[in-house]
Length: 240
Ligand code: BV8
Image 1 (cartoon, rainbow, N blue to C red):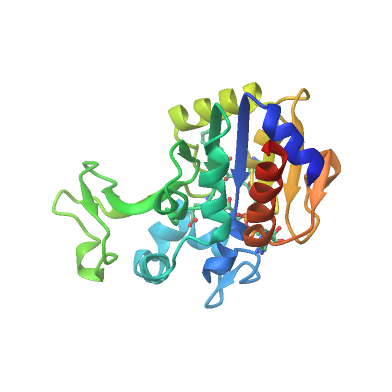
Image 2 (cartoon, helix red, strand yellow):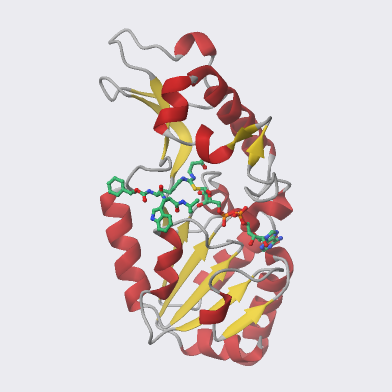
């Protein structure tokens, strides 16, 4: 923790990659936490164009449940600590795999939503969009143009938004310090972002080992909402 804080204190650019574990202490289940299933459906199937084409109503029932859960959830001490870490660092980029908007609700500024968000839906026919404050009713799925409204997320087999991906790659390549928080690093190409630059000091915050642990200079086996506030305190103590 001391070494990581020292590196952050001298860093010009910091890149943060987050996953579902970042929001676990906000009461949201991780993907692996639900063992990869939602009501006997494999999440990789629900979160795919094929799954949506086959059964759009079930897919929307899943997303509506998540939208309501995200609305009830609050950013946790980990999300808030990241906004504090932004202050002393000239440049910090948070690239998140989460679609729960909790980094933004915590007040973080420079966020890249690698896998999209659940604030609005888009028509597959005419690209019209509708807000998703309270999810989408079943009778709103079919659009008058013949298309279907789908959530603005990246499904398995779909490319990440090009401009978001480009910005993430550039920020990861510029970083002096890379923080990998709450991700099992099993989904690509997001996981590869942490391995973009061999100059950076890479630190993992995760109670469990992941596919990236072996590439890290420092691993902190603690929950995000415990480790990140402690890191901010350590950093502040080093400034005194
Ligand atoms: C694409 C949005 C091509 C939707 C999501 C290379 C190798 C192998 C496979 C592939 C490859 N390249 C591509 C693939 C295929 C695929 C893939 O990666 N499959 C995996 C399953 C093997 N990738 C894709 O399909 C990608 N697209 O490749 O397109 C292409 C290119 C050009 C043109 C056309 C096509 C798109 C992938 C994005 C899919 N969308 N989400 C939605 O959310 O509904 S992925 C979704 O699952 C999340 O966004 C996230 O990315 C992933 C879940 O992972 P994590 O967030 O890490 O969560 P997980 O539960 O796994 O782990 C939680 C961790 O937290 C654990 O480690 C746990 O220990 C830790 N933890 C728990 N509590 C805490 C904690 N940590 C800290 N504090 C705590 N309290």
